[in-house]
Length: 147
Ligand code: RTP
Ligand code: MG
Image (cartoon, rainbow, N blue to C red; front, side):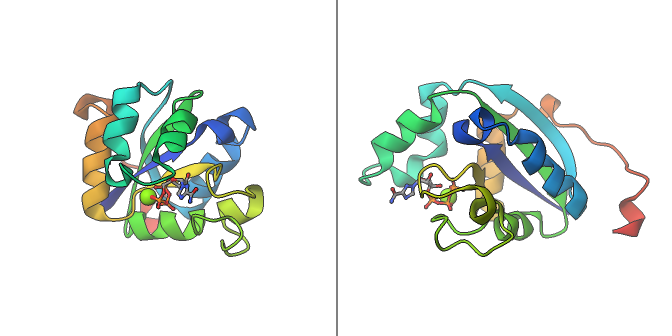
């Protein structure tokens, strides 16, 4: 069982796509174990995007991610990291495969609606940045055995 950190970015919240995005992961069969709507403190954004510090898109990215509320989530399931990245699609919406979130709803690279952890190690790091342990819920779903 694996966990991944997903986040509807400010463009997705502003465009009213939280429900659409959450619905896709629910229908896939992943399990939501944590979620909250929040305005992102600059320090949290800097921690989250530390790997991109120094790149030309870093400052605009921090401005974007702190520009309005995000919907932060933790999802659980077998291969959750890889599955979520597949459903999200490539960073540049022009290269994202049809049927992915970014292909279906985004046009640009920066405003690409959703973040997804790129590895199990990144997921652990990011979950630690965005959630306290007590904010994550452990529970059984009766359909688990059908997925
Ligand atoms: P994310 O971390 O948000 O899930 O996206 P990703 O792995 O597909 O892409 P990553 O390389 O980690 O980049 C993080 C976010 O920075 C913005 N970006 N802008 N050339 C650019 O203008 C550029 N490149 C990346 C995007 O919002 C991207 O999702
Ligand atoms: Mg990334």
